[in-house]
Image 1 (tube, each protein chain N blue to C red):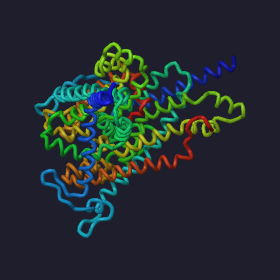
Image 2: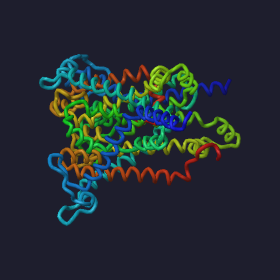
Image 3: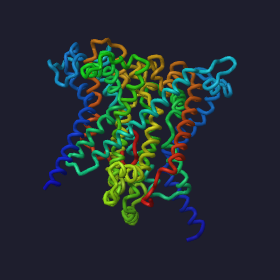
Image 4: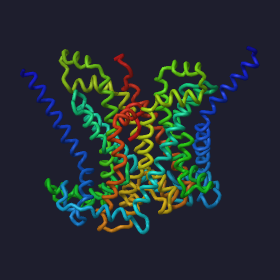
Length: 309
Length: 282
């Protein structure tokens, strides 16, 4: 075969392969790369979709964290950041703890394991919907079912959860923790991969349950815990629907459930400040990326891969 | 004997603990279901799960919806959007996955790495420019903002899932098909696609679920009530109706959960596979 001929065939082969990749490539450039560049540009502008963007340099970012000479610092933004951090760093550890606890209870030969796993997954299956958020809003109302139950077991004056700024966020945390199904299933799969011999050997050596948990189970699961943590943290920072429905769309009472995404939505679409909202999106990207990097770094010494240890 | 008895006791105890916690977890959903059959003014005082007086009224009233738009309209819209997205994802994510898993081309490794990175990107950085773009195209109040991104295979999760699955299939299959005169497309269509059905079902399930429940994008792109989906319909109902219609709202909420519930019950093992292999966010 001549060299030219071979090259021609190779080119044709490449082109026909790229034909399969074409939809994704178009999507990647048109719906990911271009939007990212454009939103970075918008983040340095003042923009309300109806008029062309006006360049304002770092103003949006400065307003968020420091304020400028003319515009005071955006306290609502800082508050939404604080609310979201509180939400993520309370709900995610609790969620993972529940997931691990239940996975450990279930990690034995149970005839009904399929049914149990399904039942425990149902909240996760349904929990992201508007329907469940509507239900939550009603369950945790002052005269809701939760308070009826709490009074029944002896709490004379429970707070009216949803409308009390001190308690509203906790209902969203409970709702998030309730949906521990995905990490539970992943933990369950991970537990089944830890060799039984480890436990047998250590119990011959006289190790108790607690000791086994800390020296076998936790190290064995550490990569999975890290993975679950990052996944849940990332989606926690982007939570929107539940806060929107439960607060009636305003992040109230008194901004106590003003999630980052909700504030971004209100800024971008409520107040038509799309430049500012774009800057918020980039700050969120940086926060998530840094926290992921930190999680990897911090866990470096704690996570063990493989059975070397 | 003693040891056996202890083991049985411990197993029984485990089962009881699991059932008790499980019941507590399901209680809110069960209460919602039962409340949808209760007479409206008896709903709130009653933490019980069995309606004292049973009625279908909530469903009849709720289905009528708001103004001239019935929940039938909202369900139809939700189904149309979800099914279009499902079809687009199943076809285009698997074509992309086929290219990454089986075809050779210049730059494959780089593109694959890029695809994995896009999986980790938070949606927010692309949301606003996409909105501006679709607005320029005149796509607000159409279903295109939901379907076109699926046709362009932007849900990298599923590409990854399918790539992993296809890599597990023996290469001899496509090699012998090529000898029999198949080209790239027919190898995919006749040989590999039928074998990836389990992974495709996982893709279909999660695409349906996420589209059905996707409140944020529907809130952005659909503003005319005749185009409203079920989540938007529920929100409209919540905002515009007084205390008296909680029963109807609950009834429609129950209906809105049924499609996901039925899919889950009938295809449970594909859910577990999807979660366990890609750690799909939940």
